[in-house]
Amino acid sequence: MGRRRKEKNMEEGYYHLYLEELKKVPPCTDDERQSLLDRLLSKDLSVRDRLIEGHLILALAVAKDYRDKGLPMSDLVQEANLALTMAVSAYQGGDLLAQAKEQIVSRLDAALKEQKAEKELGEEMAARVNVLQEVSRVLAEELGREATVEELAAKMQMPPGDIKEIMKLAVDALSVDDGYGQAVDEQTKTMDGQSMGGQAAKDGLDLPDGEEYR
Image 1 (spheres, rainbow, N blue to C red):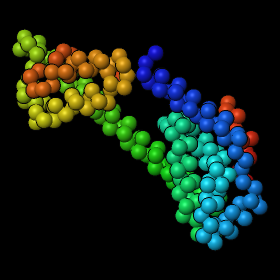
Image 2: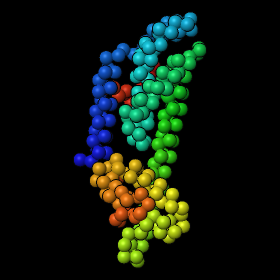
Image 3: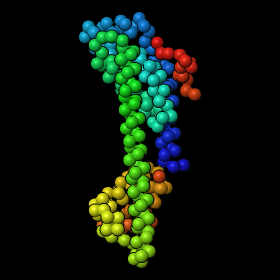
Image 4: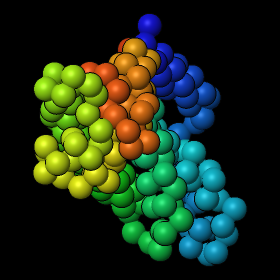
């Protein structure tokens, strides 16, 4: 089993443990919420923790709308809970539920956007690595030996520093997968400036369908 599979299983395990713990936390009722908000507006900051924990179910409900869009549920819940905390901390009056939901949606949208950008960057880097590996193979056949970084740079019309950076980032990005990462590491371990080195990775709190959090 690869490291990615293990990490995914671990994330799911943490998420289900969180759900079990959340079942023990009673949600805020409308009356309790109003009472706590009145005290908060009166500068009683001791009520913040209860306001946050009493609305974790709201954060979870919003996070579930982002399931299977690129981020694991454990990350989505963490981002949603942080946004909820920020909303409670910044509360100065009005509809807390609406404010918290807006904050959560904004933060989750930003998290997905960042994850997409990182994925696109990773794909671009993978494409560069593939080109570098192919150029390395061709030069090795032509020269009868492994090409140096300088020779690769000249062939690809890139500065030697950029070649080294691609090789280093390839190891950093792809070593998360045990098998592929080890292979890439073998291909790039001589990147100290000499050669390319070989040819060159149903939970129990679901809300009923169509039901709004109140």
